[in-house]
Each structure stands twice: as structure tokens, then as C-alpha cells.
Length: 245
Image 1: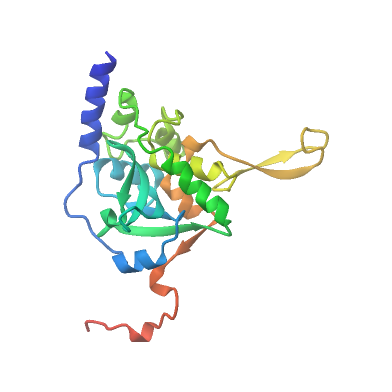
Image 2: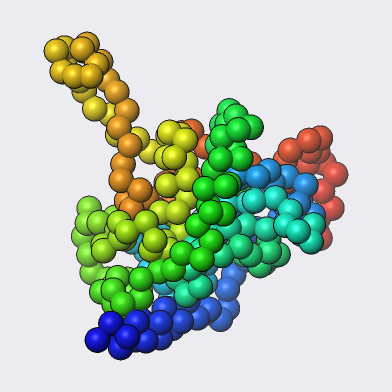
């Protein structure tokens, strides 16, 4: 039964990640700008063009359907990212894979050099982890790109069935990497009353969300990640832009 479930799950995963035609690009970032700007540990938010991307964008009410981490240059000197793919699991891909996509760069603020290395290593150590395709329910939820689910329940639908660290969900992998160094993404506020252990005082503390509840949009919304725009870094002068008309 497990073998049959995995075969059906693999077919569904390939179907869901098949690209749509007529993808509309708005980003004007060039490969050279990305190469010059990105630092190891930076996140690349991607507006995907597959059926599963459409569903994620609808459920999260966001442009971004995928997130991956820039790892620097690989053995060949080519810039690469580590990502969790529905079909292939956790893999390392060339940065050029996302040429032509609408992108956003997010960078953890004030991240120490050691912690930057630690987050990258966390993801790289999970290369080869696979999505558990025998859990077909996890995949069926994406067959309807715009399911009739009330907005307050959509985030729960994204997290449905996830929680096993070996299941390759893109935002789950990245969230775990930053939580491993106790870096905040979108923490919850928790009031601790006097006398409650361990604080022994009346104060407002931050509490991490479970890693399976994060979506690509959360890194864009996080007050602890800055948005990096290569086109306006350095000596940007809008008067030097050459317009068609």
C-alpha cells in the first residue's frame, strides 16, 4: 500500500509543479545584479508559475509561493541556492534557475558571521531529505488552486499534515534554519505574569511559532528581515535611466 501511495504521490507532485504558460515578469533584476548583491544566508522569494504556486499564493494572499536560501558559490564558482522541492526534495540549484522570475531578496538584519554560516550549514546538511509523497492528503489540497476556504483557516491548510522535519516544504526548511540559531521571524507575544517560571517577573516575551506554520510571505512581512533591492543600492541616480519614450 505504501508503494502505491508513493507512486501516486510522485505523480501528483510532478503534476502540481508543472509550469503554466504565459508567466508575466515584472522584476528587472539581472543575473549580474543578483551575483553582486547576494550574500550567503540571504533569502530569495520567488513568484512561481505552477499549479501548486497558484494555490500557495491564493492561500497566503501573497505574491510569493517559494523561498530558497543563497549559499554562495559552489565548487564550480557558480552562485547557488538550497531549496526544498516538492518532487526532488532538498536540493542545491544554480541561482540561474530563477532567471526570468519575479523575485525579492530578504536579508536577516545584524546576523553575525558565525550564525550566517550556521543557517547555511543547517540547510546543506539536509540535502537529500524528501517530501513524504505517501501522504497524499498533503498533495490533494493543492489540486484546487483556489479552494473555498475562509481566510482565517488558509494558513492552517498550508500546514496540514506537515511537521515531520524530513518532509521537504520550502518555508519549513528555512524557518527551521533560523530557529536553530534563535533568530526571530514572526514570533508571538506571550505575557508572563510575576511568579511564573522561568521569568519570575511581569513582562512580555517572544515565543516562536512552530516551523510548519511558516509560509514564504512571512519572511517578507517579518520586521527582522530587510528587503534588499540591488537596483537602488550604491549610487542610484534615476535621472540616468534611459526611457523608451
